[in-house]
Image (tube, rainbow, N blue to C red; front, side, top):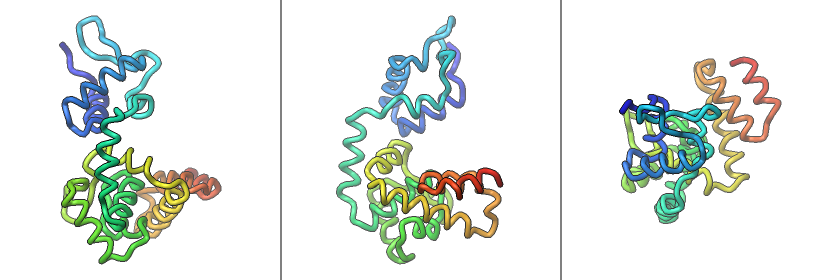
Amino acid sequence: MRPAPWALRALLHRQGGGNPFLVAESLRAAVAHGILCRDGVGGWQLTPASSAEDLGTRVPLTVAVEDLISQQVAVLGDLARRMLGAAAIMGLDADAPLLCAVASVGDGDGLAGLAELFVRELLSEPRPGTYRLRSEPVRLVTLALLEPGEARRMHARAAAALEALGDPEQVLGAIAGHHELAGAPADARTFHLRA
């Protein structure tokens, strides 16, 4: 049997958080949603009208996983919840000052929130000073738990913080995306054109 394409394997790993059970469930759901099928020699392939990204948008997490993550988030203190929301909004590795800006908290409070996220194993530090959510399911559930108005404000703060970086040219697309999700289409257009 041939291995699945790299992009598909990476997305399944991210969506399932590395848990073999969740990866298997994601595969089953992708087949049920018509995204994946077997090829003639027993390998996995995307159906002609699908892409690997369809797994992230058309195959929902199982309710049990959403419930488990929601329960973990529910017991967090306010600062940790705000920092978790900021990390979910950023959707990528970020440093503490950037997360604090997005969460609208001071550095000391932000570090306290990050410490709680470490204890609860919702966040990791892949490199010194750089923070990452444990998994894509944690990010998706956290985003779903944010109030729409707060999510828009966090996206606006993310765009402003990224614009303030010494070299925003590296993140023009991200700035545009945050402006768009903040409900600022004119600003989004400006940054899309620069990207």
